[in-house]
Image 1 (tube, helix red, strand yellow):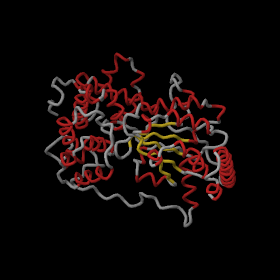
Image 2 (cartoon, helix red, strand yellow):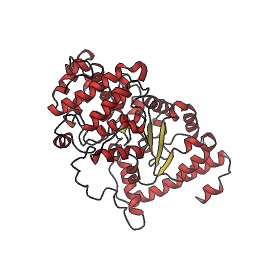
Image 3 (cartoon, helix red, strand yellow):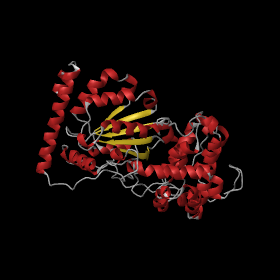
Image 4 (spheres, one colour):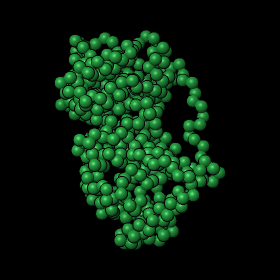
Length: 434
C-alpha cells in the first residue's frame, strides 16, 4: 500500500504499470500457497451450461455472469465472477461486454445490485484497461441511475490501483455506491446469501483468508441456533405455518393487505415493483407483522413500500410459492411447442397442493390486473415476469443461473398474460373468491 500511496499523483501509464506489478505479485503469492497446499479438484463454471443455440453461447457457457434472484429488499442481484474468465485468447472481450449489456438491459429499469468476485483475475485472463475504459464509457446513465450498490469481494491492491486510474472518470455519486467486502460473511448483512451464486473457487479462497486471520477462522455469522418462530410470525415461515396460525383466512395476511392496498392506490404507478424502499423501513414493517401488530401503509406515503413488502414475503418463504417440485418442469417449458405452452402451464399449476394453488391464483390474478394497466404503469406481463419469476420458483440450492432464468421468466409471463386460461377463472380480476 505504500507504493499505492506514493503513486497517487502518478500518471495514468505509471499507475497501469504499477497495477500489472501488483497483479503479478498477487499471482506469485497465490501460486506459493497453492504449491504448499494439497491440490484441489478442478472448478467448473457456476450455473447450468446454456444451449449451443444461445446467441452468446461462446461467452455464456463460462458462467462469468449470473443473475441470482433478488436481495433482501427487492433488488436484482447480478454477479460477475473473475475466476470463470478463460484465458484472454479464448474469449472475445468485445462479446463479453455485449453480453453484459444484454443482461443488464433486462434489469436496468429497476433497482439492481452488482457483486464482483475479484478472486481468480490473473494476467492470463484479465481484460485490458483499455477494455475497462470502453466498458465504463458504454455504460451510460440508464445503467448507473438504478444501480444501488457495487460489492467488490476480496479486493486487492490491484483493485485499489485500478480504482485510482478510473477516479477522474467516475462521478462522486457513483463512487459512493462502491463497497469493498473482505469476507463473504460480510455480504450476509446486505444480501440473501443463500440466493447468491458463489463459485467453489471463491468459497475456498474465502475459507483460506479466514483461516489466515490472527486467532484462526472467523466464527460463522450464522452460528447461533435459530429462534423458534412467534405464533404471529409472517416472514420466513411456511404457508402451512401461517395458515395454522391464521385460521380465518386462506391467503396470508401480508399478501392480502399489500395486494388490497396496491389494487386501490398502486395500479397506475409507473414502475410498480421495480423500485426498492428504505432498508430500515422494510425491516421495521416486517417486525410489526411478525409481532402481530397492525400495519397501515397510508402512514408511509409511498406505494413502493407495500410492493417491496409483497416481494420480500414471497422471497423469504422457506419453499417457493410454486414449490420445489415444479422447478424442473418449469425449466422444460422452452422444449414445448409454443402453441401448447399455456396448456402445460395449466397442468403444472393444477398439480400444486390445494392451498398453494389458491394462493398462487390469488397472486397471479392481481398481477394480471397490474398488467392490464401497463399503459400507465409500464409493467407488461414480460416486465412483471422479470420481477416475480425468481420470487415464485427456485431450485433447492437457492441459486439460479442466468440460463435458468429465461424459462422461469417465460413461464411466469404465460401465467400472467393467460391468467384466465391457466386458472380457468370466469370472474373479472380481483373479484374471484379463493
